[in-house]
Image (cartoon, rainbow, N blue to C red; front, top):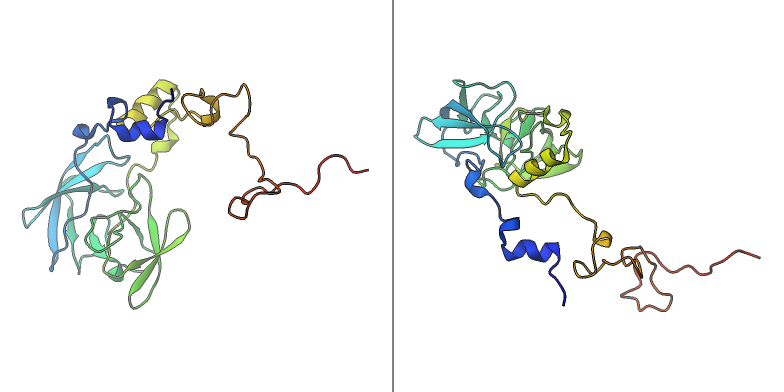
Length: 237
């Protein structure tokens, strides 16, 4: 009798793979779009197990309280703004069309009003490279360029906590608890190292199913992909 592989077991909803969402403070999103500039005040800096960067709790003048990733150099009591017309300073939320070229930004929206999808990890940031009538070209942390709508918003600055990766874990158990708090599967076992009942690539006593094999010389066109079979083998004579 077979056994569910890890990808199938994660979708089943067992306690092993259940997300500890009750420990997370909130979903880090930007303030909803407002027609005018709204000022706010940072009232607290929050640690959330579900995020690699610290979060700031901002209380805006219209009564809304929002949590999103903190920028570098911010502290409790600072004033920040959200909306068109805000100053280009760390922590302020502005549309991409109003941010000068070369400014570091983070928490970039994919669509106007979605709260931010890109560049949210600690120490991450992107830069605006060019502008056009309808789009803004942004250089992502991977050095790739991506175009966004002019009305998409972002936070000015660099995400705090950039030195997080400089401290080593030292022990595998520490890394395990860190990954478990974020609902990440750790450690990742390779498929070919599993038993036959755990994965189709398991059981190395016979054929190594995980080994890269070329397509057959007589394979049909739909299956003749990847590494093709060599025309000849053996030592040349």
